[in-house]
Each structure stands twice: as C-alpha cells, then as structure tokens.
Length: 385
Image (cartoon, rainbow, N blue to C red; front, side, top):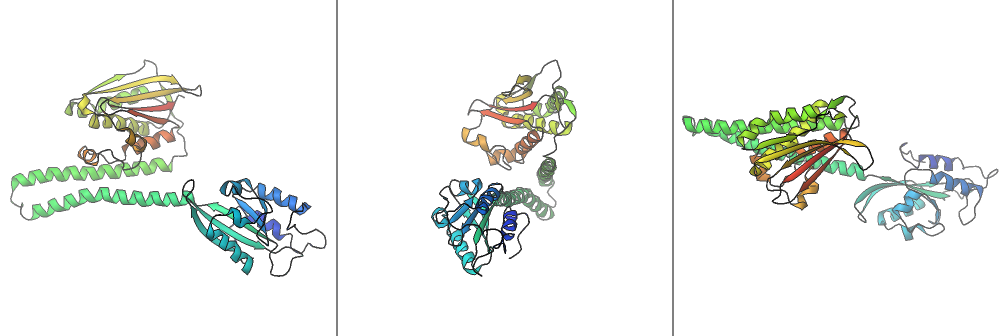
C-alpha cells in the first residue's frame, strides 16, 4: 500500500479499511453488493464523517457509499450503480480503471467548469480486504481535495507581480531616459535640466508611493486575522485627516466641509491604519472629484441591520461620478477607471485596496454609491466599541 499524505481526509477511512484485512475468520467482509452487514453500516458512518468528498466503490466500480461532499460534486451518484455514470470527468474514470487493474493507488488533478471553474485533486486507493481474491481489490476509495484556493492564490500572485512590475517599469524607464538625456544632449541646457529634474522628482515620488503602498498592504494582510483591541475616537482622527489635506484642497480649489457629532465615536482600532484609511478616501475625493469644488465628510452613529450600533463615515465628492460597471472592481489592486487620469494624479491603484483590507481587519465594510455626473460617496462603517 503506497504512502499517503496524512492531511488527506481519506486517510482515516483507508486505515479503517486496512484493519479489515485478514479478519475473514471473525468478522464478515464488507459487502460488495446490496446487503447491509455491520461492516456496511460502519462504512457509511465513517464516510459520512469525513470533511472532504469521499466515494467508496466495489471491485466492479459500483458505488457502495459516499458522503455529502461527494454528492455535491457529483449529484448523479447512486448506491449500487456504476460510478462511471455519475462521474463526468474522463481523467477520473480512467484513473479508477487503472487503480482496479493495477492494484496501485492513483493520484490525478482535474478541473471542472460548471457551474464555475474549480480545480481538484483525487486519490484513488484500492484496498484488498480479508477474504478477497489475491490481487483483486475489495473496495476502491476515492478522496477529492479542493485545490481551487491554491490555484486562485497562484493566479493572484502572478497578476500582482505582473501589475507591480509594470507600474514600476514606467517611472524607471522615464528616469533612465532623462538621465541619459542630461548626460548627453542636454548636458549644458540649464532650462531643460530644471524641467527634467522636476519630472524625475515626480517619478521618484511615484515609485516611493507605490512601494510604500505595497508594504502597507503586505503588513495589513499579515495581520488580517488579528482584530485591533485599542479603543480610539474617530472624531479627532477624521478632523486630523481633513486638516492635513487642506493644502491639497487649496491647490485644487476644493472646499472640505466636515459635519461630525459632539460626542465621541469610539471603535476598537489601530489609529495609524484608520488615519491611512480616511486619508485615502478624502485624498481620492480631492483628486478625482475636484471639478465639483466641494468634498463633504459626514460622521454619524447609526443602527446596523443586526441591531448593533456602528460608526458611519461618508466621504462625498461632487465630481464626474463613476459608471456602474466599475463600482464592483474599485477595490481590486491596480484597478483604475481611467489609467491616464490616475497616473496623472499620482495614484498607485492600491488606495482602495488598502481601504478594503483595513476595514476587513476592523470588521467594518465599505459602501460605494455613484452615478455619472452626480459625484461619488464612499462610506466606511465600523462597529462601535
């Protein structure tokens, strides 16, 4: 019997079946047809208690038992019927035949596309029970492990690396080009040197901002499971953010209007992360809604649907608004409604991703409302302490 990964959900089942070997003098072998001996009842009980999908077949490929997980994966499974009727994956059916023919375990990976794309790993293990013919398996145990999260993480990692390297490549290429120009044709051109140095400073700042956002996002993700437990008041935090962005507001001709309650809004949170959260929301409103000439910040305490009280911080701009098809994707990393506009404003494409991850860590949520021509409202909700 080959070695199996101890993390496999079918390990316990395989061990129990192996203990039936050589017991033909004292315990009747597990039935291979429709009878319901004690072994069959035990088999069903063990299978039903396993977390991963498990199917047990007899030596002829008929279904002896399966659990709820397997029933979800293959709704057509029926006890006593050939498994090949219900299993629509050719690789899996062929692996079952190979396991039966060789008496050796098979391990395969396969994917399904209905109702959605999923990747799975199946281990097909033939078990020879006591009283069976030598070389003929008494049962075949199929365990299926879901690999979809692993594949999706790999896809996200690949997309993240590609996007990050693309974002860094543009300012690096600009810096390299200007440096070559300053060392060559513009060596003695004072006006060109001053103009190029200003552009180089902006590109270097853009790279520094991108790296800072990437590091912040990584730190927040590492602590995503650790909820902050320090009580903080949102009122002075939002006031500090609004005051700190007054210079940017004046440069863009935008007025920041803040309405907040007189009583504290206490939440359990990380002060630095909350400052970063509201800085990103207000800064986005100033950058992309500047044509509206006003940004409104409203703090309030409201009752959630579950009856709990929560703090509500709404940041509204009166700019061009955002089309509905973009709203669900705004918190994705590097997603931009207008790439050129975002880069011109110095955006990294990570601001709202940071907002989402900070709110998730604080057990809060983000709401986005917008219509083209009617501005946008970003609302952060946090449970009150």
